[in-house]
Image 1 (tube, rainbow, N blue to C red):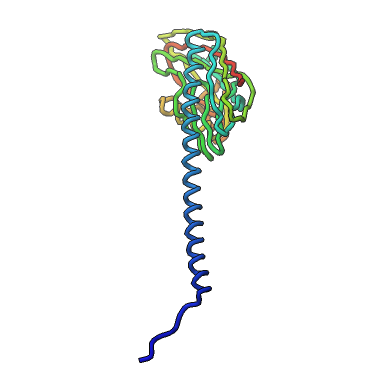
Image 2 (cartoon, rainbow, N blue to C red; image 1 turned 60 degrees about the vertical axis):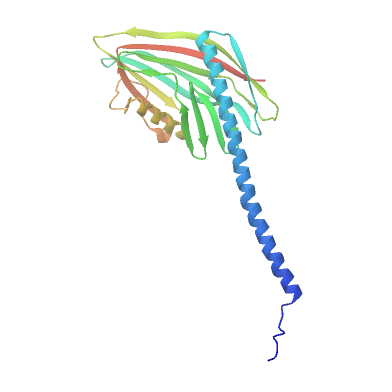
Length: 258
């Protein structure tokens, strides 16, 4: 029997082996680098979330205890610290269809943005956002019940932005004012609160007010109010609540980056 002397070209063997090795390396690098990048971004966002929580505590110390100012050091970590992105907040108090009190102000937001994600503070609440979505990760310091409603409005002022690798001091200073404190057992007050912001953030506020069992307002339901009707898709959230006692306080917190 004649032995089989057929073989494979050394050049072709080299090309096949090189192709397999190249494809394998590309696959590993493509998936591995993506996973490492995602892990690094998540770690940076988690660090930013912790930093904003610390800033929130400092802001609470300023407006709750009367400390004139408090500085918090934050690291941008390749992202951007910003004060701005204004939104509107309004409160309307009525009784038996008669408007008794109205208050409207514009407030800034504090935001730490990293790539396409961010965490921030607005009106005493903490948020975390990604592409097309915003979640409220800590509720504002509001109290809603039938015997008492307390609305401490934590309003930010300032407009600034910093993108640097160095630590940045966020300085908070505050002024406070009691706007309203009334009690009525015979005929309860109707408290209407309106927030106008981006649609994604409005959706987060909408979910919060639903959790608090407030009632969404339409124009027909609130003919005496000037706050419009609930429409989160257009960035407008309007809810109402009935209570025997209402307390409204305004805390103006000036934020600056240094």
